[in-house]
Length: 356
Ligand code: PYR
Image (cartoon, rainbow, N blue to C red; front, side, top):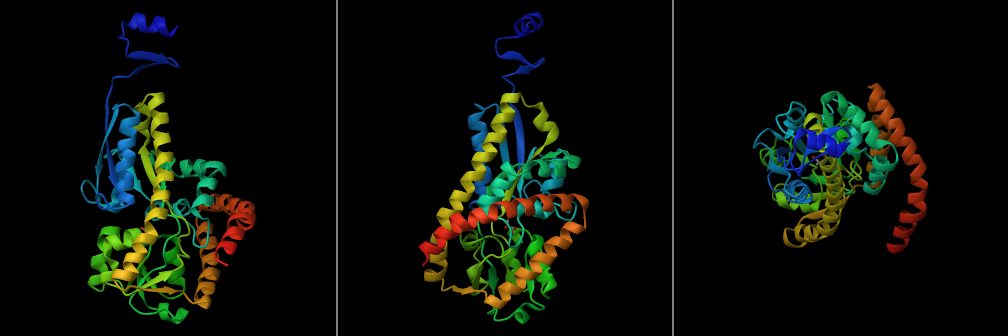
């Protein structure tokens, strides 16, 4: 019947019919991708560029994407609205930036003391996480995709040593997501500035401490020029997911093969970014410590235990504020409880041995 329809419509060989819909394989889609990252920023910005390039290559040039750095088309924290409203077709960012409009958003980036990158991907792809994320973004006309992961982050940059929980009181810290709520609860003052404002924020004294990602990114931002102590572990972000959201209407216009290509490219980007961070972080940390004299510090055990206890309270309270957040957290928590024993038997058992 497809051949009949094609003949009847007098279509050329480049057009065909799938499920009753005539598709034009010569149509070129010109898409815009807005990002929350400075243009070409290592890992995040370059990951967005590579994703765009991959979609163009995999589609044989049928989708062409122009990538915009933060502020070029819209501000870094305007990405969600821009894609929702169709000003752009794709948005590369991370979900917890949207917690103000969507209380469940935090859970799609990271939970303090929560899932590692590997576990997060497992929850998203095999634990029902993607379906919940789609449900959360649907009212905004958006389709979410995991499109990168930073792996375990660092605890951040401080200008004085943290020897007790009291040292955090009154400290002005840049931190997004649920980690910020934890710091607030132990007495710090938090602000979520976008990446491109962090260096200046430290330089001008707007903030006393800053947490962004890890050595690869933090070296690029030059945080060693404005802070002396670099703290581990990144209790607040054990495996933060990056996203590339798609405008639902733009996606619906694509032929089915292009839709598969776009979704598959997102998965490649997701895997690739984590591999890049894993490869680059230690090199950058060596540069920070050996060339720039950065003082590496481990948070004291009692501080970490206090943050761990507070994290559990904050996460439950955040979930209780919103029915969808509650549903998402119930899913993620059940998944964590199911996979955590395996992580302990496999990865942790091995790492304990490696670092014996
Ligand atoms: C941050 O904004 O802190 C990220 O981890 C991307």
